[in-house]
Length: 344
Image 1 (cartoon, rainbow, N blue to C red):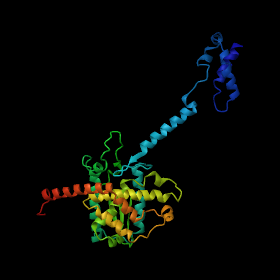
Image 2 (cartoon, helix red, strand yellow; image 1 turned 60 degrees about the vertical axis):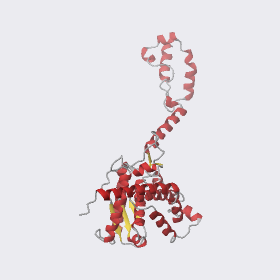
Image 3 (cartoon, rainbow, N blue to C red; image 1 turned 135 degrees about the horizontal axis):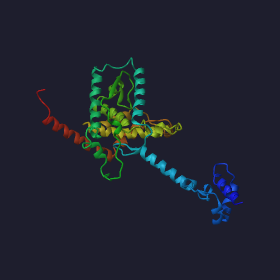
Image 4 (cartoon, rainbow, N blue to C red; image 1 turned 120 degrees about the horizontal axis):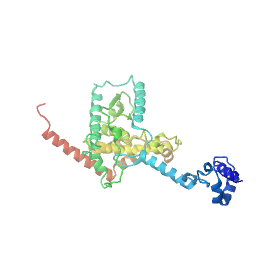
């Protein structure tokens, strides 16, 4: 009889797998108190190598399991969250920098194939002009974000004022490292605009040059496109989710507004007066018709130029841009006075 009790206890300890009779387990738990020390001494050693009571693990408790899962997910999200330079917005990035560049290269290769018969020669005066403007913006971005030297990052120092908390997350600029050259292509097309792909690739239409006469206004358009790349809008989770159609314009408009803010700061850091960005928005407001409220909510992906003008004219934005502009112009004067060679 004693051997039967011990064999039964050994068997019941193995009945915790899914599908085990719950009534049998309940009976054993209620009957465990009848096992006396004298009975345990008569059981074979192999049957009492582990405690007779059911072993309890933390993940058997649903509350503890849910808490651990929530903590794990929060840690994963925090690791994937990045801070956008210049705007200091936290967003969730779902693509690695290399994957983002690969997608950009594929997209830009397709664009070049589409416009292969209308590509302007790189030595054409218009191509040279756009290239020189873009080089100023790219140089300002690399210097301002600390790509050249982390101690010399005016864009970050101006936009991070009052945020010296040691636990505050720093803006993410690692995806900009390694971009030694940017590819710029000018396309003969009457379309007014420009587009960009991750990995330092920009495509500009000649219609933009015909419509905008000053270098500063063209520079703002290029800075806007570079702003998309700095903010990693392509890798943002909102651009990768299968969102309902009526929700997509909202997230795209938010990205355009953020690119505008980064663009005006880059414009000023490159030595162009921020008023050029305002001039661009004013000129666009004269040719873009008014949007209805329903159309703006469900269809329009770019904010109306009047809305863009109002946001660009905000006091904080203009104050930061003007500070960067003064710093850039002062540096240019010093460079011109002490380091330029008038004989060359």
